[in-house]
Length: 99
Image (cartoon, rainbow, N blue to C red; front, side):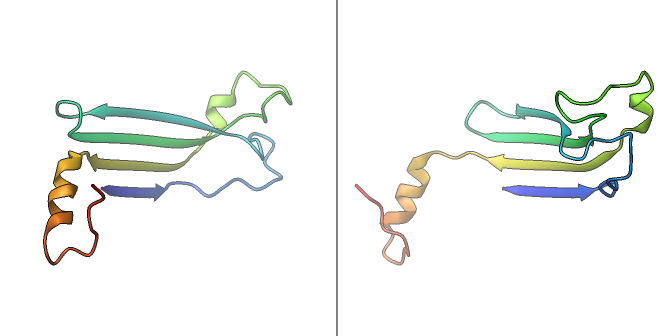
C-alpha cells in the first residue's frame, strides 16, 4: 500500500466569513486498475465549504472563495488470502496460519 498526503492550503481562520468552520467538502474517486482483486487506486480532495450544513446563506460567488485544503492518493494491491496462508506455513514465519 502506498499513501500520499499533500496539504495545499492552511485551514482558514475563524474570522473568514467565506468558509465554514465545522464543514468541509470531499471529492473522491476510486478505481480498479486490473481485474477485481488486483490494484486499486483512490484519490481524495478536501475543500473548504461555503457554510456549515443547514446554516448560513450561500452567496452566488462562493466558488471564488473556496480553497483545496489537501489532496490524498492511495494505491493498494489486493492479493489472495492463499498468499498469506503459504507464508504462514513456512518454518521461519513469525505469524502462524490459523487452519
